[in-house]
Length: 182
Image (cartoon, rainbow, N blue to C red; front, side, top):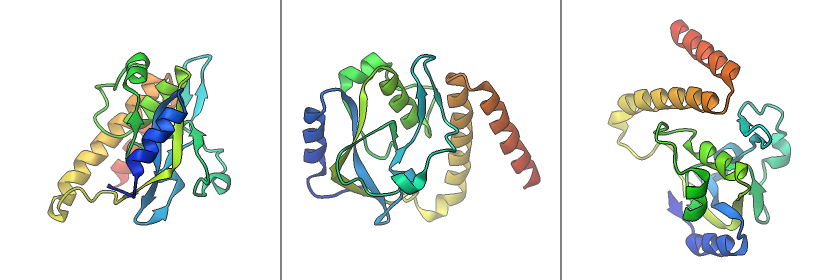
């Protein structure tokens, strides 16, 4: 992750401007390209039943696949970079220790939103992210094994945590069948 000019200052400015924001996040570029799914997520949050719906297939990416021109309130941001207000995090329940990696960002965003805190993309704050570049290429097989394990576990666990039992079972069945076929 490489922060662009004044990224932290812009994040702090946004955090002061939006006093109800539990999370403020910069605009994230991947290899100098803007990719919506690598920047923010469109979760559906059911505040009445205190749950989130992860299988949001009806999001119109054509509308959202643009670099935000101004600050943007969103449901979830990727964990690449987040400025989180500590007091809000404590009220929302801190980090879930059962999630090591993957979906921890959506979990904390969902809990912030369920507690009526905002999640803001600060358009002036920008960074560059080179995904999967934190390790030597020699370690790819080993890292991929652990990454796949944690992604699968977290994908299952997060669905169970938010009462998406059928989705969790279908997810495991799909993964099981795909791995069996491989």
